[in-house]
Image (cartoon, rainbow, N blue to C red; front, side, top):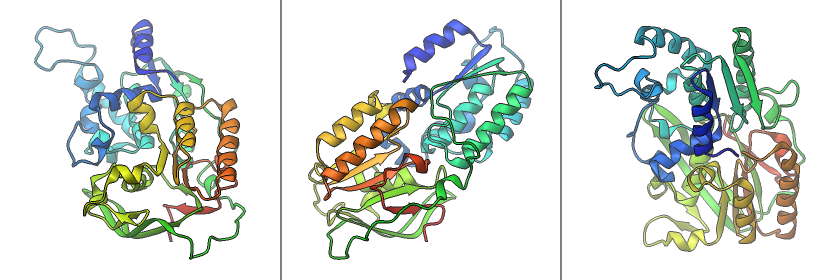
Length: 351
């Protein structure tokens, strides 16, 4: 994984003709805010439109006098309009940047990388965090850039299977015997209604997870996967207003969050971004604690393709050795899901 300071050094060496796209940039944005819960607090913060503005892209002080501008605003805005259409980020423009999902943020960063009209584009694991539809769209975007004479260089990442697309994630998986209703309830979310402004994530959504169940959670970018996990872990303040119980305990009313969290462990892109830790380190820490509830949110993001099978086997071996552990895995790739995960929730079609 290339960290933010390394990406900054590379940009300084290569100049403006080269643009970069990597998870390190997302980490830089996260570290600038300084706290992972920021995305759940109100509608404040820099909007996507501001992030893609002429002044922001070229790091221009609008009050500076006598500074030579790299190009006219008119030329920049004409190019940005084409890029916004190409990357399909128009609906994000009025939203706070920190409110976007990981996959949505990656698309906005691609738009920003292209905003200066670079001759060469360097991408590190460009499909990381993207759902199947957006992976297919990214391939079309890169083909269009190559056709326009842009040199595209891809570093790292896991190549998509040939013919992958929206249907890839929905292929059938073997089912194990269902957990009996007598098993204790670990997570219970009842009649959740959640919207951010005009953006509706959940309408009357309910989900019950019992001890020992292993759930594969997936859905399009922005469908609410990480938001659900934040309700469970307590990172989102909305957990205190919604009907959410973890280990039978609701938030508020004297419930001690730390006591609940001691029974949980999780891995997520946010932890990589805010803590600057490699995914393998986070997985090691999560499994060492032998949690009652294990949350694996995109655990293979920034993992080398050659190392993914090893990490997958390690997760499967841990769950086999701890049959009482309840687990939730978020992944856009069915091939990355260990067979131990026999339950499935698709947020694109939760019914």
